[in-house]
Length: 351
Image 1: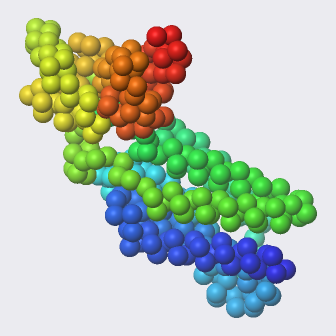
Image 2 (image 1 turned 180 degrees about the horizontal axis):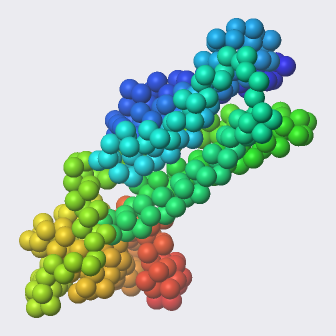
Image 3 (image 1 turned 60 degrees about the horizontal axis):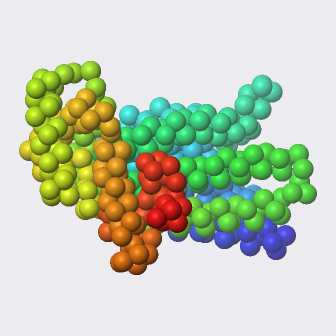
């Protein structure tokens, strides 16, 4: 009993604290998304506080228990809306109101006093697990599309591809399955309670250490998305594409903008003298590469030159990827392997 009180108290208290930090936007980025992540955290905390009251036999107050339980079905919709707002901060959260209708339908049933059909009782009992399955698949698809979009506007998306959200989501799915197993195998409860706390600490760390997903003002995001996603409309003639392609290659060779780790599609478009739409069109039709592939190909060639001269300069791998315009070692290794077909260390050994 002491163990459960400690675990549920720590879980509920940690999540409530996290929710208020997110409500006040402690990370200072992604304000709208953090509001809904805070809502998710608040209602999840209420679940653990309810568990705590039940362990302590303090569940005589029906109104309090109804309040704690009313948001259970809003946890996953809140998380889902937060993800959508991380991906598209320009959109209105009100369009997701329908996701919270099940919660509104649940509230009148909480005080009890109703005789419900058996199938409805089972539906209410296991509805959270249905949400886990549906929102789990939906979230995975959204994050894959987000990652594909980032490749078209940024050459280094490490830390902003929401991989931490996907990892948390896999953890939530796992814990959801474990909680379902505990219903039938109660002996696993102490292990699952410990995993809950570890998962919450993991979730809290990444939620509070997040960075801005798009290094742009919110109103620029839809413009850039439209530019990189629209492929059908012919924006430039073949002659214009050829002309701007040559200008682009000259700027890349002479000015070396790819060595700037903060380079994005709008910044490069400004250097070339094109709109974001036009540069995206030139890359798609004139170079047949997306922004990520185009910029990182130049960076990798520069890194290869540094590696070839390494016997004279004695650079470390970290110095090489920084001098080549990369922000992270992970992105550098991944891009190098894609372009060269081997890791930087293997390439260095062949020199």
